[in-house]
Length: 103
Length: 167
Image 1 (cartoon, helix red, strand yellow):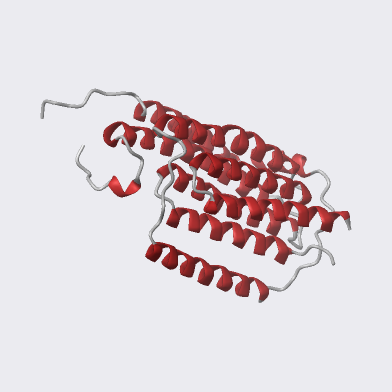
Image 2 (image 1 turned 60 degrees about the horizontal axis):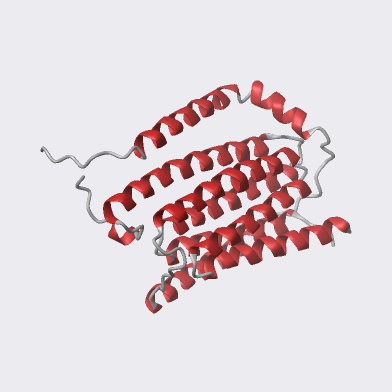
């Protein structure tokens, strides 16, 4: 039985669901960041799979995936800087404690 | 045949370690499980004829982003093996949302037509480079600007400042 597009899409849906669950269940800003990385990875896998199974030869899906990886790296760097700042102010990275906007 | 076998091997690795990310209680194990998920996705990229993306995935995600997150884990937790226990209501609600989401996604996927296996694409990297320097030149340049802004922003944000006492 050959591997079709559906196999990749179901795997990607599973990855997306686990990322969603990670975001919902963890009480740690870094674990939530890892959940976001899982979500982005599932989208990347989706794009590359669609690119591979497209009827006309194209590279657009891979280009989009490349940009997603780039933006994920930028997002991780900024998120880490914010989390470190938050830790310096509250000595905790529990996102439930981020209740005040006062500086 | 080997394609099928390899797909199932790496898909099992990816799915199992993704479940490990959710289920493991301590943050270091979560990061390790995430590493194996990223490696599995990189292997799947190779199966999908995207060798360059697989290399980028390994270098940028597993090499840089995950190390950055691990540094964050080490810098922020007094005890990295502390665990967080979600309440029963939270667990129930999240699982309900996840199950509804996953079943509706798979149902939607199975209504899609199944396209035939891809046409032969041998010079993936050549086409990728050509596209980046012709059709996608402006996004490519903008992304370099984004990286520069990120670098400045991260350096500015993580600069230790004295708390402002005078209002």
